[in-house]
Length: 158
Image (cartoon, rainbow, N blue to C red; front, side, top):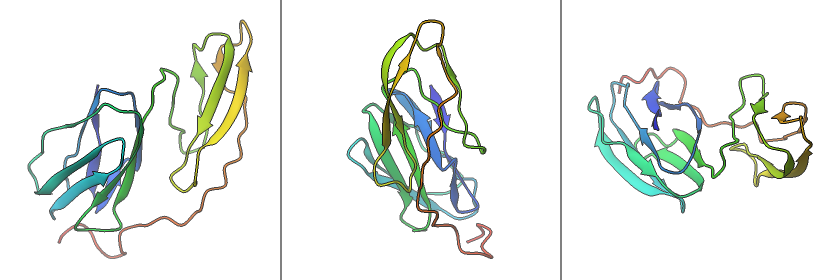
């Protein structure tokens, strides 16, 4: 599966990407300035040296874990790639909701993660026969709301 995390407006878009192991991610630069994408994360350390309009080769993410992305040129640029070893995962929409279908009956460990949480929220859930949709479980996440953003007034022109 090929996934795109682009740089636009001196930000990564999307800020959070969830993928299975073995996925390749492209990092196109849509800004007028150059970027230098890197990660020192245990799950995937890599570096795409300074580049502009050209698109570098995709990066293959093989190991499960959380990968923090940064830009050596613009230190406010931060994003995350989560590599998960389950076919049942989903990133929430803007409303914070998800609905995962097709899960066999059984006992599961549900993990919810947000970039501003110190550790994932973990909850044991049991799905009984005929109830194979995870859509009626409320979790209260209390992440730190401070988000690093590009300085105002910068349009990506330098």
